[in-house]
Length: 292
Image 1 (cartoon, one colour):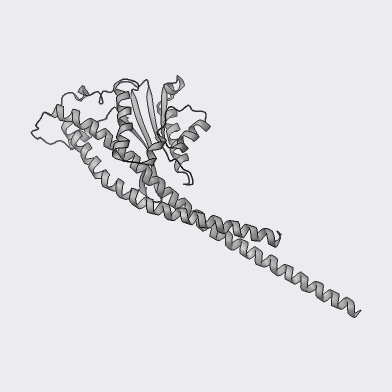
Image 2 (image 1 turned 180 degrees about the vertical axis):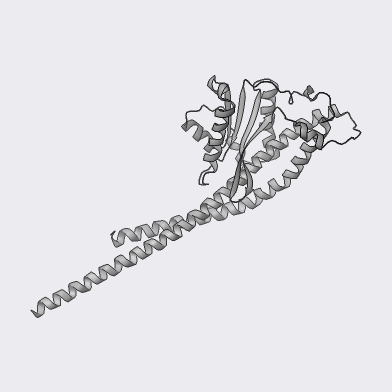
């Protein structure tokens, strides 16, 4: 059995750890509330904008007039991997990185083998895990977490859109954690470019309106706007999911520290009781020896 001093050191260490994890849990809970409000506010707007775009596109004879809707066999692929800059959030970063690697192995194996798959990492943790797996990463946008504003996110979205327009990439995929609730994140692989307009969506959302200016001009204006909103929503989703995952992980860590503290306290009391018992036995034995 460990000595009393060693057990006291362990108890002090666990108490300190519990204080840290409890504080981190409260900080993440406060940030989660703000991030959750932001994503819940933008989702209806993004969904409605997409619905309008689909409804208008449904009656056009050719939706390939826009550079962002032209679909070709992808030779060069860009995968935007959205993770976090900090760890201590359970499997948040590991799970989404595995999802990105699975996407490459299943959907873009040929492009990856010939070196035509590029990663754009948003978050230091995803970049670190890809490098650990010896996967080359291009530029990163880790500093976006200093200020997640629509204008800052739009700059990244425009850079990607311009790269697609200049044929640097034939396809762009977003891989991120979608926020469901504080304890659940859904790993999402979402095609960002070219814009997909599904036939079944077109028919179900079709309405015969009179448009001014023309539908073609409106769609050319709406597609870039919709892409910016979609990218912003993905960042907000991941940011909210990160704080939910960290809050849950720190809550579990605090509970584990509390349970461990109870075990160490019990172990300390038993060791202390054994020490006292031994001391009493030594005194009694000494007294009996003196009588003899």
